[in-house]
Length: 326
Ligand SMILES: [Zn+2]
Image (cartoon, rainbow, N blue to C red; front, side, top):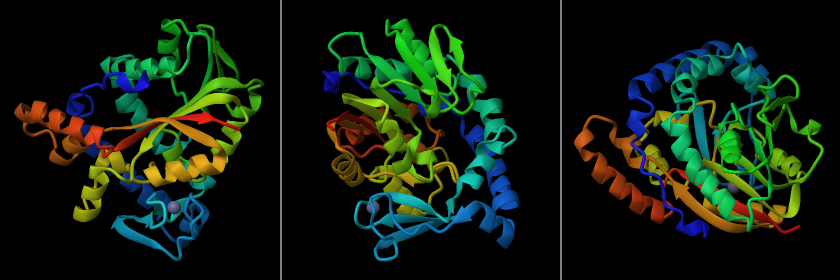
């Protein structure tokens, strides 16, 4: 049973230090100001004003907002989803994620080098895999991981005896076959349907999440599972950010996290796109993000309280398991 799989207790600050996060954030803010928010011309080239929420609600009518320079964060009063405004257009996203784009440079310098095949990816993947495997009666199912990056999740699945695996990520130039797993540059080159499609931390990086889901759905078998993880607008952390104008670096990721989704949105989404919620949970590092790393002796207490937040669906990331019904 998926609901009985135990959660990880992770000490966040042993993985990403505050110093590193602050360094990356500072460089990224300079990049945003110099390239995108520089003048009217550059703003026009890379940004646009969003008129409605991902749920379909016209934002002009009902929203509340808070400001973390240079973005306004607007919360839809109908579904509770928060989006940045102005929004980055496709040109803007291309600039950020291009090879020469600042995001890749820092990801390579810090996070990938440090985290590659380390405790972090292994511990996190283990639970993801336990959960995905529990959805199926046997280990014979096909899975596509969209936005798979280096493919660590797929390689770990392979080690667990799952063989029909495909990864899609724009980082691959052409089709690559590594360890019997196929990696594609984009969905258009994939020619089959899957029992399961995973999007780990993908949706919040896109300016049109509905568009991707509509495409993804075509590659999912009827009765198949769509598994996603994204930041939560309903979390304790988000409420703290709004109330205290606190820039929680690892959560807000200005210009990279474009959306923070709500439970209400997930329900609306399922109704519209013909999915059924199989299992929903939140996982988070709310308290450590708020309190910082100064007092190591409090870590056990912090993790204990975090477990209570998790069990009340108030942690900073949603993990959703949706079954395609049509
Ligand atoms: Zn909405």
